[in-house]
Length: 221
Image (cartoon, rainbow, N blue to C red; front, side):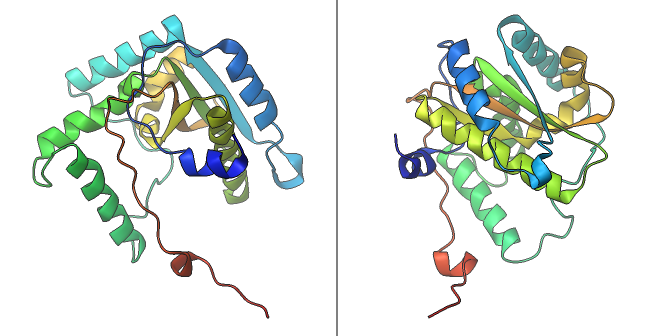
């Protein structure tokens, strides 16, 4: 698979089979992803990979919290500005319409939307998950580095025939994740990432992208 195919075939998959992900494949991906760029080579990412019993335990804990209506953990970072301006507000709204529309869920059906959202904390059935942390003392440039690392991971997963779904949703249950992983106190959970083989019977809707002219300006002859 060439780079262009990896980029264009990567998407947030929300339905996985239970086929185990080979440990060797994950090691290849994460060893190569270590070459992702970072300012002054800080390499500010801290990744934990969960499979088998530990992942099942985390899913169980998250499921129990959902079932009892346990509120989300206090946010450790702002996922979106409280007043999201245009054009980002419209893009987010369009994503919601496409995502839930594909599932046949009406905009006003809050309960059905919540049920669909709860699949996040089962990793959409994936048998492997990565949890990415960053040191609390680091700043915006290092968060950017973490993003480049995660994109590199996702593209390399495509080269292995695997799919993924990055999930900031796990930051809402960061206490439950910490109970299973026991990360150092100085680390903050940025996101989880479900990893596995795609369930081709699941919803395969892919959200669109803005035209090139909306996001890129060419300056030159």
